[in-house]
Length: 264
Image (cartoon, rainbow, N blue to C red; front, side, top):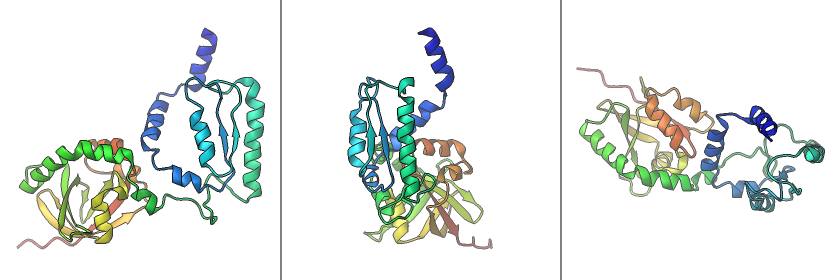
């Protein structure tokens, strides 16, 4: 047993794996509808006698994905040596079916044969993590807005003013300060789940108060930009790092600021 434990540790231990798994758990919300639209060969593998992770999740997954192949052999957690040939055979068969269907790479396709992407409708579904985080942040965001209006907030924050898509009135949101000359970079931690993002989608003309000065500009949503990588370029990295931890569906927004008025 000690030798087996040592070999397993040496083969599989990765200090970052737990963080990746936990992050996946927090962000894997609202995926059931997208799984139902999968039109690629799918294989669900799980041990029926797994005492660590219940096989009920695998069974539910198999029911959600249209016409999957499932394999729930009588074993516990992990892949026992005697079953590896059987598992390899099933994986090869799934790959063969994908090749026969003319599918390449690892992009699933939708029912109309286009690469499946997270649609705007899917992004509009508010996740449990979004609701939890916005509830926790409500008090601090209110204080930040008051401090920004009074001009006493830390320079790491800015005040974004959008036009309410229903009311037509000015709406203020505390955001990280991403000012870079005549461009303001913003990574919306929750994407289009956030009301201010929905507001600027409807009316992209906005105002931003950074470093005590109001400027107007036009917001441009960049859905193809790597929001996590963009976050790492923002000037106040301590705030950006918190944003990455709290994010559920990060989305990059660039605000093209109007030229600043010439000083008199």
